Length: 145
Image (cartoon, rainbow, N blue to C red):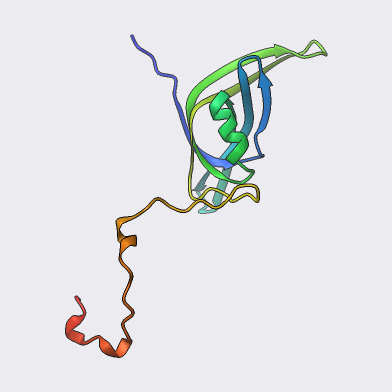
């Protein structure tokens, strides 16, 4: 039987990604927060925030380092990975991570001082110049509703 290991998240970055070099490229590590709201049996609003550890490699890591900033909303798609390691103190540590294979902005990309503003793609409507029409020049019969 086939199996699926896929996580899809939309959340806010908890910190600007930390980028480190590896033998084969680079790795970005950061966390995002997802939020849930509901009303309890008394009608009081309750909120829950869940933090997710995100890891991205190579080209996706470079993208994270250039464009992602704390607080930004992003869409993350990837694989859930669990790993462990033994610390210097001999204590075994465990972590669950999302190894991202797709990251997209939700909303607008933040502007940075080092990056020039990029104009939007050409739209065919840009070929036509709007004609200024005075308010008094529009008759009631010209309004489509």
